[in-house]
Image (cartoon, rainbow, N blue to C red; front, side, top):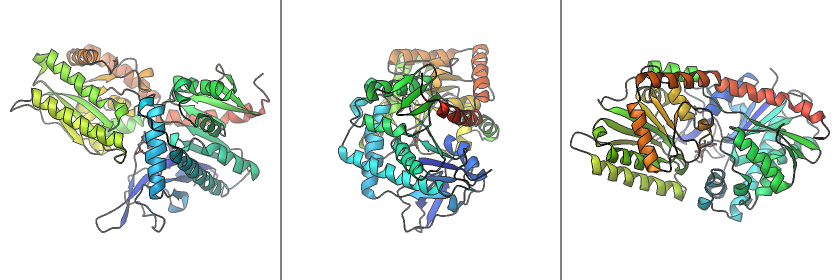
Length: 485
Ligand code: G6P
């Protein structure tokens, strides 16, 4: 395989931090993106452009990976192109434009959105930096005319860099496709246009040859944005957008999980819960999009309305620390912990705590045991691009089948129809759905879980990656089309 792939994402496949002696250590990540792409980057000796976290500074050497079992272990330092953020950039780009402006907007929560021109200026600056770094990597490709040369850009942090990069490769006469995958929702045009830089962002994305989303809804939202905001010509049937003399392919490619890997971890994972109660599980990054407070209140209503269930269940919530420098996230943590304390105080007894709460990262092989042994999973995000926890829970249900309670406002909710779908914003419905899940008989649980498992096993992480490359293969034929007519 020739050297022909550059992956560009805000985060590198690892984070560098300092140990107690002040020495840099590399912690390899294990998310879906890394699991899918690290093997490709390794195989084709490609590159990965991204940020290693705020503790990794320009004057430091990249520490070697010490964990040979990690998927990103064998990526050589020469394949890594690190981007460094100054303190100001970290605040204005990452905390500001990415997490205080774009994140709430793309999750259709515009009242939480803060726009500031200094955030936007820093977004432009960082995107320029990424484009320049990706261009340097492209210039090292083995054959600059190879039609397989590809830069694959990820997520909302980098929406304007594709056009910047396109201009660079076009000027240098290099044959290179640019593709993009958005890991979050994409909102309707009426929400997206609240962004003061909506035009610039859409135009930035149209530097790509292919733009892909988790669901059809998001893909159509994007196409409609191009129509309403930019006045582009679009074809919703064929999923194409025309910009200048270029046609851009838009696709819905739902992300899957490494199903067998989770299933095997569930087989090997030790027993996490040593209590007699039925476990109701929530696992989320601590983010307001995940609906954790609504969930806790729905559970409270369940305990209130169905007193016979008290002392028979425990709600186990794992909250993974996230974006702790952003005000909304800090406030959320305080509010959630208050609510959990209040509900526990209201119903708890000397023998029974109704909610157990962990604010920490749990290694995946341990988490697999939590998934396996939980009778009910509450995935009740108010909005979520996909939500892989729903899929991971299903893959780990290898023994007595549990029940997945799922919000329809997640990408997963668009396909996982055999879950109990519930609007997480209404407490009574949530409480009743928890009760239905609690009462559900073995036969129905088994039927639903089998159907969910069959689908996720088939549409797994490999399927997602392969269908992405199938879509990349369409680019050349679409390029030949002069016009949509
Ligand atoms: C979401 C985004 C990812 C991001 C992750 C964690 O899943 O789509 O791009 O990496 O959240 O957030 P963080 O801000 O810590 O990277």
